[in-house]
Every structure is written in C-alpha cells, then in structure tokens.
Image (cartoon, rainbow, N blue to C red; front, side, top):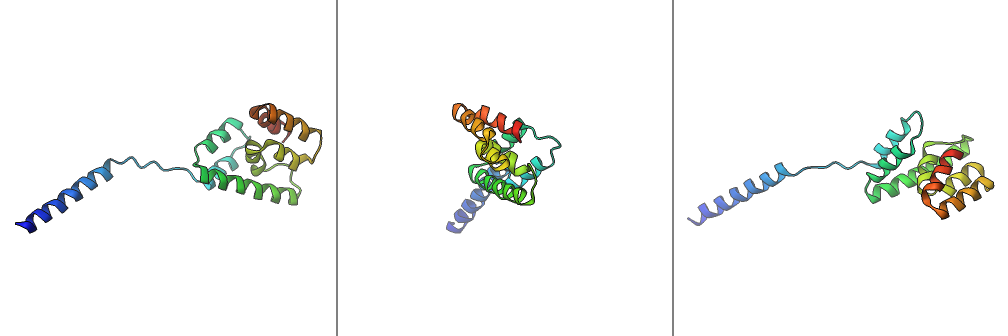
Length: 131
C-alpha cells in the first residue's frame, strides 16, 4: 500500500510540474549580439529604434553591448573610419565620449558635454547630429 502511495505521489508531482512547465510563458530575451546585428542592418541610424533595442536588454547584456561598442569604435578609429555602429550605440550610453572620439576635444565635444549635463536627451540628439 505504501508503494502505491509513493507511485501515486510521484505521478501527481510529475503531472503538476509538467502542467506548470507547459503553461509557463517562456519569454526569450535578446542578446547583445542580436541587438548589434539589428542595428548594423539599418540603412540610416534611428535613435528611437536603437534606444528601444537597448531597453529590451537585461543589464548584463547592456554592459556587454557597451563593451562591444567601445571595441568597434576603437577599431573604426584605427582604420580611419568616421562613424560606426559602435559609435552610435556609444552615443546613447555616453554622448560626449562618442563625439570626443570622433572629432577629438573640439568645440563639438564641449557643446555635447554641456548639453549632456543639462539633459541626457539633448546630448544624445546632438551626438547623432555630429556623427
């Protein structure tokens, strides 16, 4: 009789766990690589689209995306390119840094720094215009 109870409990627990698993809404989160690929395929960089893509990432993936942006920006600068995907993503995270890396410490950098201090969004908009 005890064996029957144990088998019954095991089967019931399996049924309950399967039911919970089947009902579980598995929400796949994006990765930094997927966001990078989405942004890279854009013909013209859209600030709102990039912001929405970044907001959809969990924090560890955002950090990973920022690191990827810095690496791409360094590569672009070494290759003599003006702006890259990393530069635009970096312009959302740290606008004055993106402008400074692109133009050097010039008046555009200082304008962007002041705009970023006043409000983050004006700094981002100006960085997109300069880049």
